[in-house]
Image 1: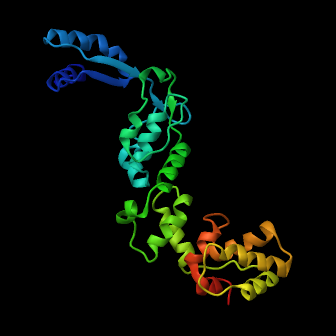
Image 2: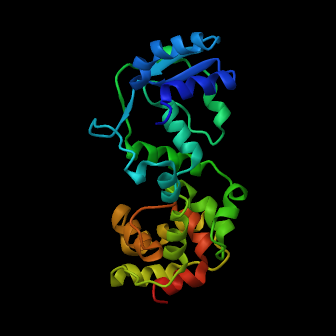
Image 3: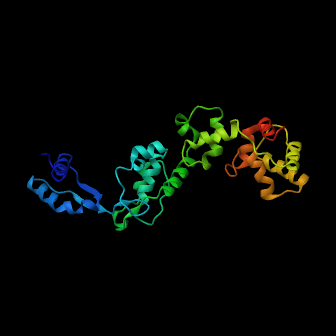
Length: 261
């Protein structure tokens, strides 16, 4: 036969001088027996605390067979280690935790007595939001070694980091902004005015507002009817980074090319 967990865990805890054990409440029923084993082996039992279990979004148990929710699976999907730590740190209580890439920041204010006895649900969309917020706060130097070494990456990162959920999304934006693709061009009147009013280089963060103001005056178009066709033509997406930041990144030649000029 083989030794049971109940005995082996006690031997390990004694060997490593463990003073506190925090674990899921599915082990609560083991505590009395393990305390007796501690005492029988001449040791002192650690302090035990038991928290509620983590369940899936439907309230069912998380299966170890679900590879997508394993640490390896989450890493391969592009989740930041700090995002998972932040998410787990805020489960089981109603207080919001400011996302941070530094694990030690999560220990501030941690208390077992604020954890709910009800099971906490793992909601992937909430993990996505935390992951996005962590990435948005990182500088290029912190992620450069993990990015594919494509042209303009150092300039692209500060423009798109607030519009990505996972790090690999940067490459998607690189392809949309700089790669070859089918361009959805504006209607003829708007297209003509856009090319006619396109300013000369250098492009700055004021270029977008001055250019669209000139187009608006020429065509009478305003708001979404003006901005959306231009955004779609230049970026290939109906939402994303501020166009004021995108224009200097693209430059006049690429903007004119996307508009057919």
